[in-house]
Image 1: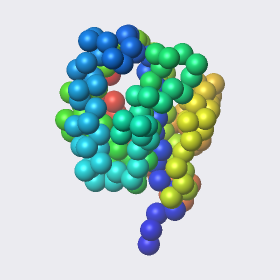
Image 2: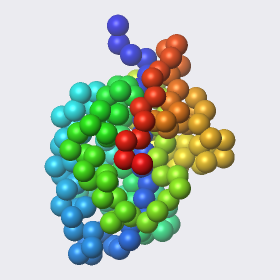
Image 3: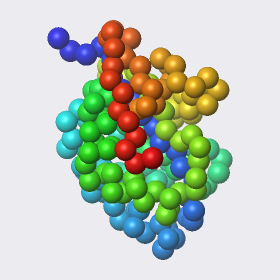
Length: 161
């Protein structure tokens, strides 16, 4: 039986310098390996890409320093394993070198299997999380919600916080 829902995630960040600036070089140099790691991870379904096979050229807001990544996974444990228990964690721990502090920058939500979320949808989900806190429509690893066709889900704690 195939799943009826998949997990969408988005991260937004405001870069400390333009993407071609030397300060951001380590981040940019790690995009291809980290994206390849995601694509090879169990549960990976899809990721948003622009012209350079990453999302650095996609501008979700009028602010040219804002960056994003968005992906879809089969479930919360698969995404959690990639985020917190793979080589991705070493890069994530360095995010303050490249990105300004944001109180809220990540949101998770369920989408029907096979449907890919849009940038506008992702922005709306982040705004919903900011306005209402975690709900079944927009949530976090710390306060997850099960897919609409599931009874429960275990939290995945942010081990990098």
